[in-house]
Length: 198
Image 1 (cartoon, rainbow, N blue to C red):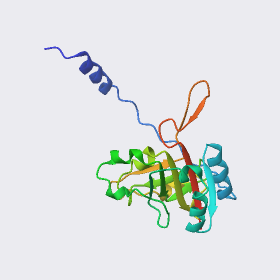
Image 2 (image 1 turned 90 degrees about the vertical axis):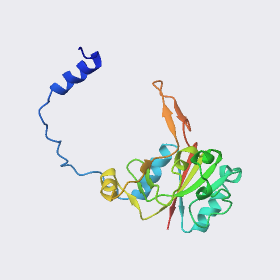
Image 3 (image 1 turned 30 degrees about the vertical axis):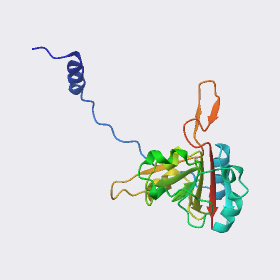
């Protein structure tokens, strides 16, 4: 009995054992910024986001109230205590598909990374993690003292003691083609504002 072409190909691949290779050394010092907050602001602004320094949650609310996308949104959810006008309770939605009509979401982030403008978010206290990707506009609130310089520091902060979800999000959704045409909001949130709180 002859085996299929697929089985023959897979068997040939399995027979090819490559010699083990040492991992490259990480003997370099990653970038550390004198002012991580300023660099984070410049980086996120450069990739289509907006950064606002807020001393209190009231400052966050005042800025949101001047933000047309927030004011005009019909469906808003917030997982940050103290945010007004949140009229969708994410925890009350049984099906994550019900979140598709949420226009504006105000969400907490664990920390920020100055090097690339990213935020680390998890599904801790977030029933439907699709909210990070399905809403039209995102606002994040992150403690101002939680801005790291680089991804090396970020990975040192991560721990995976149990199954869960985590992602680095940097600015609004964007895509670019070979003609160097950048499109914002192509397959996710069209805008991102980050409030550095504290």
